[in-house]
Length: 168
Image 1 (cartoon, rainbow, N blue to C red):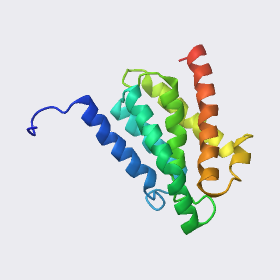
Image 2 (image 1 turned 90 degrees about the vertical axis):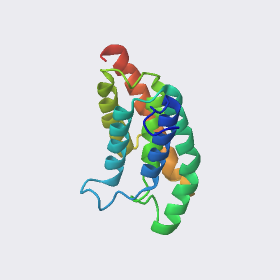
Image 3 (image 1 turned 60 degrees about the vertical axis):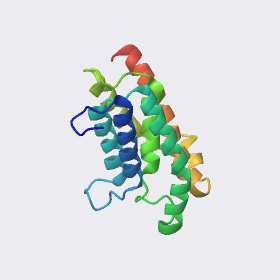
Image 4 (image 1 turned 45 degrees about the vertical axis):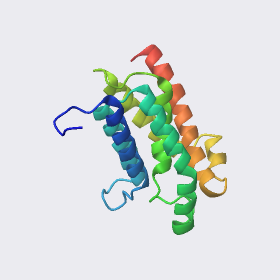
């Protein structure tokens, strides 16, 4: 492939998937005065807004992030203690779930509303830890770190479905 030829959508999706995985494993503490979970979630939303991925690419990003999240969280927990703030892969998995399951295209003009609503709803549910998310958080190893954010993602998905039905 020559450097001036445009890349296919599939090749571009693969590159962004790799970038999301790098984001999930990077330490964002020290890069911003904001909490790492908020920064990580916001960066995912910004990347998705610029990327405008296909639903296939969103599901692939979610599944790959999910597969690496539990072992990576377990490893980070062994280094930094219970639910370390340096581990942000759980936020990436949590916010990708509702956006992938929503099925709305993110490459249309009004997609920024969905992304912004998803960000604020996910952060609310992640911080609030509404039952059973609070129960999942006490699970051992990487499971507790990841499952509470997946539950926040499910709450976000339900809220987004209601919001898109009524308003967006």
